Length: 232
Ligand SMILES: Nc1ncnc2c1ncn2[C@@H]1O[C@H](COP(=O)(O)OP(=O)(O)OP(=O)(O)O)[C@@H](O)[C@H]1O
Image (cartoon, rainbow, N blue to C red; front, side):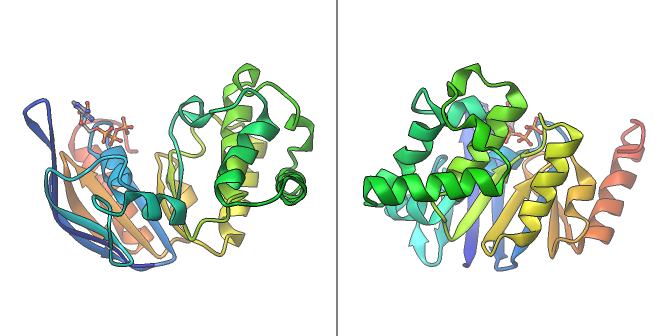
């Protein structure tokens, strides 16, 4: 997929959050890092029209996120930073079925895909559990299952490991490696990006470095040290 930002800027509450960003993302694995408040989530939300640019445009395979948001959202999955934000139905299985109903699958097809997806992630035990009563990490894994079961063409992950224990972190890392989709991953878990194709570093609403992971992450660590914190 080609994700294109053309002079895309975002303003909120009268102040710039993203400053006119121009980017062409075609790589299979793209990471985004940056300090808290740098604008990473806003950049990610532009990709599927959850946030619309105040200036410029964002297109996914030529589809404008402003005028063709519905089509873009069917093709681009999104895993939210806070998994509770994406839970719609009370039971994990029902919540996963929600996305599949929109794809027009029969009940039997839905059940088969849900069971297979949960099993693939080692989550079969969660199928009948109330989604809102799960732990933060369990919710994050259930949210991952709900995105993957719809088999979108590209997936945006906003801090996918922030609540995961070591076991699930390793599971997620392994899942990311095997997914055929194009992935855009925002994270503070820098080693997650070691084998990515490209990493963007954001600061104050701008992309300030854009390189292969080793160079971009080194740039970011040195930048953090310069800003006076401990090395990132
Ligand atoms: N709707 C909004 N209204 C006002 N300010 C906003 C809005 N959305 C984001 N911001 C501000 O824009 C800045 C960038 O936010 P964003 O969530 O994109 O950062 P981030 O890099 O993802 O941060 P973090 O690493 O902490 O998740 C922050 O200062 C945030 O408070």
